[in-house]
Image (cartoon, rainbow, N blue to C red):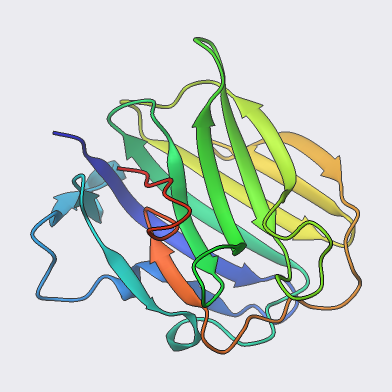
Length: 197
């Protein structure tokens, strides 16, 4: 049985100090593969077993024009090293990730953590990662991950410590989601098929 626990999953606008809690998409009654659990330092969290399905219209939780500068905070404890999407906003056809965080095993000593940020209607290579970082494997350990995107830089914070900064090549405009895009938690939908559990 596979389990992943989240207790913080927030997106912040750097300019407007707007906070979005993506775990509000997890609704009661819970899917039988989702359960309440204790998170880091005893805070409330959610556990996800294989087959968990959390999907909702993105517009219930996020603005149509996404913030240009923002931060994503995630606290997670995966029970294995298979990886997958921690969350994803996917186009209406479930074929392109417009915004998401993907964790994938790289080798025995490293995992790859990627931030996907793309306009599926305008980008030449939609769904590609704008930044990828090699991090130590995190399976079995509570880990705090944060991306801060400001201007043309993305900084990864690993357990509250500045880990690495990369320069971005991206449009100056804000990301516009399609009105029918969907928010997935612990997956990126049935076609992309990279579930975290």
